[in-house]
Image (cartoon, rainbow, N blue to C red; front, side):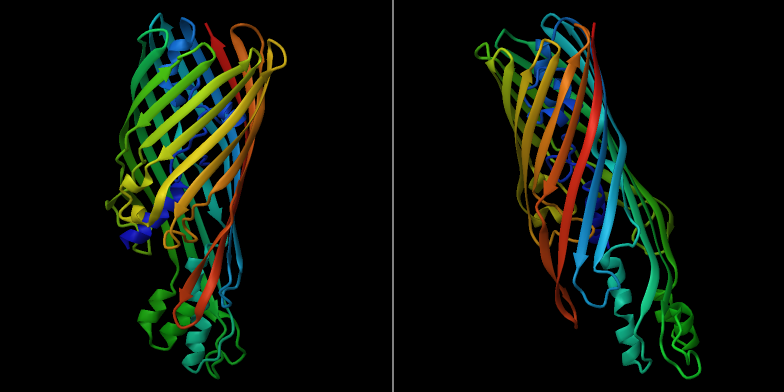
Length: 446
């Protein structure tokens, strides 16, 4: 049961708009949406991507308010012939995905604050449930026919909706050692909240029985088994609902260094330690027994090593590359981490060109490599490698005020597994996903 809970938790956490890892949202700024190689940033979002790099900002206050609107479509196809549906679709919507950055720079010293959804951030709604929810029901006609009650159909009202949000509050202190080297240390406080709502109701079948159902009408499975004197089987097909949430808090230590060995080159390095998160169930209703009130389980945010390089090719043209390694195999996911073949990584490239002193255009590409075993993949949680395309620009109103806009489209590599349905054979289940979104940010320097 605890393994099923962990799978649900992992699936819910990886449901929202994750660019870069199984858990962590790396799209922490609108600048990222238009220029995804951010790990050597010396702009305002360096608060997250390169905390040591904020020492290159001018003295005084710097602020940035960001919001992204994101959409994701997940399609699960299952070839098991007894299911009523062969395709299950979830539309994930994140209308508000905010982040805030603030920096106060004073000569060699800078203090900064960042806020954003470090994981989660959306709601996945499977209006028709999932194949794993329905498989047991789909074999009911075969079971009843074997009992001598010829049955050809089943139906049920099945739904599942999950939402997840990990809010991160980050504080950094940065210091410029000399013109070439800066360092920083910080802490991020994580408040994580997951909500689950689901129901399996009105389970019906059409067994032929000369007295109970001579016309083979659709009737209640629960009532049928009670009438037949089979209360244990009847209980299996009674209405079941879930209304539960899980809460966890944790601290992420962060270390960063920034190097500028020559005038046109900047290098950023960031290391985030593993964040221990122990989720506790707070359950209102649980007819499934999957969310015992007060029970806890671990689901950490893995450690991250992030490296980036920015290079000014010419005065108006900048290129950048970033690399992130997520240490999934070293996190504690109640054993689910053992089903990860190798750690997730991403590699991003980006260019920015200033058309004028006020207008900049940018574009980039991000490859994310995920390597998990078939045993990890399921309809509740599946991870796919992806190609992401990013573009946008900046408009500077004056020396103090600027506007960033960005947009992205992420195409995931389809994957499929073979599931053994005991007594029925092996059938394929496939996973497809796309993500798209846009964002706007206002930046102010004083």
